[in-house]
Length: 112
Length: 115
Image (tube, rainbow over all chains, first blue to last red; front, side, top):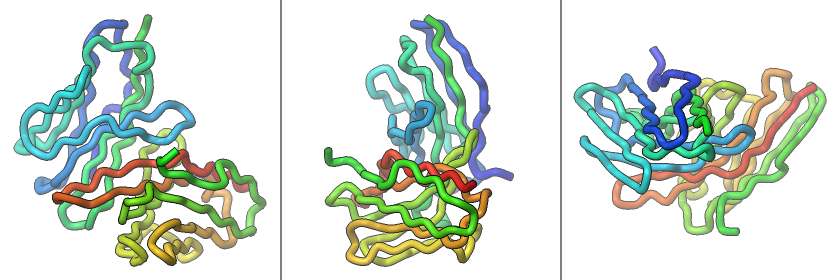
C-alpha cells in the first residue's frame, strides 16, 4: 500500500469555480502535511502546510485535515487558468525521520 | 536570489559515465534533502543531511549513489556508472527545522538524461 494516495485526474474545472483536491495517507500517526504545486517541467513550490485537524485558509486556498479519517484536502476558490498545474500532497511519517512522502499528484486544468 | 539553487540544470551523459550534481540551500537552512522524480510520479526521497551529517538514506538508493555535505552548506550528489534507469529530475530541497516544523523548499532541479 502506498503511503500517500491521490487521484491522478485530470481534474477540469471552469474558471471561477472551486477545485477540490484530495489526498489519503496510510500512517495514522503522521505529523505534518503539505500541498505543493508543480508546473510542467518545474520544481514543486509550497502552497500550504497544515499540522492539526480542521481548516487552514490562505488567500484562495484552504487546506482541510482530518486525522481520524486520514485525509487531507485542498480547496482552490475562484480558480484561475494560472492554477492549472499538478498538485502534490506530501506527508511526513512518524517513524522515518523527516523525509517527505509524496503522492503522485493530481493534474488540474482550469478552463477559461 | 536567496532560494535553493542547483547546478547543472541539465545533464546528458552516456551510460557508464559518472555524474555529479551540486545543490546550494537557502543560507540559514540546516537541513538538505535530495529527491528523484520521474514523469508522472511524485518526488521520491533519496537522502537528507542535518548540517554535515547524513541522517537517512532511502533503502532504495543504490550504492552507485553517494551524497556529501562537507561543511554543512552546499551538497553534492554523485552517481557512478550511470544507467538508463537513472534518467530523472534530481531535486534538492532545504529547510530550517524550528518549533517542530520542517517545511521544505525546492530548487529548480537537475534533469539527467542517460543515453
